[in-house]
Image (cartoon, rainbow, N blue to C red; front, side, top):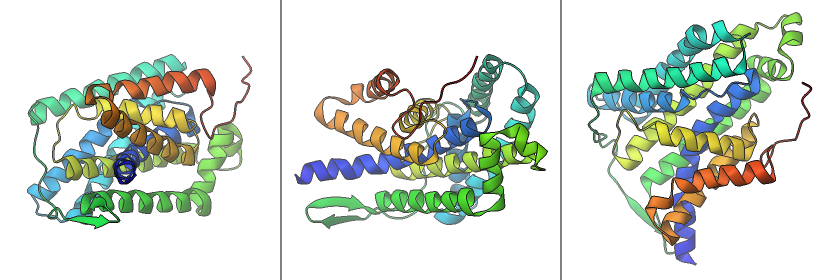
Length: 292
C-alpha cells in the first residue's frame, strides 16, 4: 500500500508539470481554435532562461522563476503577433503547419545557440527527503506541487474575477460579438498566449530543478504529452487540462513501475487513441455539433 501511495505522489508531481504545459494548449485552443505546437519549445526556453538566471546572475529560485515566466510571456506574445495573427483568417491547416514550423525554428535556434549537449541544472536548494507514514516526499516534489497549485489559483482568479478574464471568456464564446461589444480581441489573444507561455516556462524551470538536466530538444515529448493531457481533460476546458495532466503523470509512473521505462512514452499516445474513440470531447468536455 505504501508503495502505491509513493508512486501516486511521484505521478502527481509529474502530472502537475504536464498540467501546467497543457493549460497553454487549452487556453489558446479555447480562444482561437489553434493547436500551438510550438508550446513545448517555449517550455524548453523557460528552462534555459531559468538556468542562466540562476547560474549567471545568481538568482534564487523564485526570482529565476519569475524572470523565465516574463521572458516566455514576451516570446509567446511575439510568436502570436508575427506568426499566427497574419493567418488568423486563413484555413486551420495553414495555421497548424505554421505552428509546426515555429516549433522547429525555436528548437533549431536553441541547438545553434546552446549546442545539443545536456546541461546540469544549478542546485537551487539542497535536496531534503521527508518520511510521512512510510511515504518519502522530497522538497523538490513539494515545490512542484506548491508552485502548480499557486499558479492554478492565480489563473482561476484571472479567468473568473478580472476584466481581462471576462474578456477571454467572451472571445472564447464568440469573437465577432465580443468585438462588437468593444472588446479588443487582438489584445485578449495576445494576453492568452502570454499567460499560457508563462505557465509553460514555470514548468520548464520546475523540470530542470527536479530532473537536474535540460537540453534544446527537451520540449518535444513533454509538449506532445501535454497536448494529450489537454485532449484527455477536454481541449478548451481549463480544469480539464490540469486533470488530464495529473492522469497522464500517474499513468506514466504506473507504467514505469509495472513494466519498463521504454513504454512510458507509448502510454501517452495509447491514452489519446482510447479517449478519441470512447469520449472524443475529453473527460470534462462537452460534445458540440459543428455545422459545416
